[in-house]
Image 1 (tube, rainbow, N blue to C red):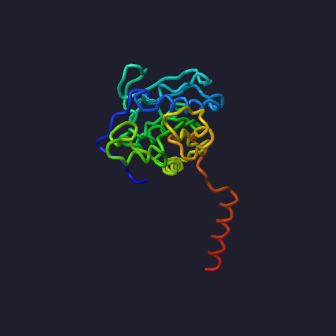
Image 2: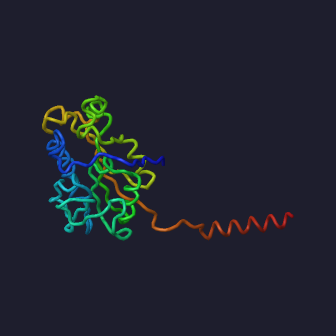
Length: 233
């Protein structure tokens, strides 16, 4: 995995309202997640970052929901998401909304989230799509320094590749909200989604329950082969 660590990055917006069309992004994101909350079970739901905090999780069956960020006043826990103060396999679901786009080291963040997630834990990941209207505007000189165009944008394929290396099973993937500044219920945003401005991925952490070992049959077969070789010699 090629490192994409950088030393300087634009600061994440304090809320969706600080992003042009942000309220529509949030409405569309909540609409996509609504059918999934009853399926996501567990004891602890962690929201990382300012934009994750504003996602509506009232329909979730997980009772203990808390948030974490490196700074801010509305978070239950302050700390570096790349070095979270949780034990291994202690969180059942993690909400990572637009966090990779503003992370200095996205790989480190994903590895840390993978560390704290329990086996079969849920990862809800969203980011801005470079193959969308936002990706085009990003190359316009007088707009590229404004939100959300100045943040990094990772393609769906690239994110899926990262998750595959960590052995995640992809349960849902969708791009939505083609035109940022209009309602998600608009005909275009509602019916054409493959080049939407936001990518959403819902995945589960899959791990083998034990280390594969040779069966007794294979061991016996290998012993017989060794004896045959000795006789031939």
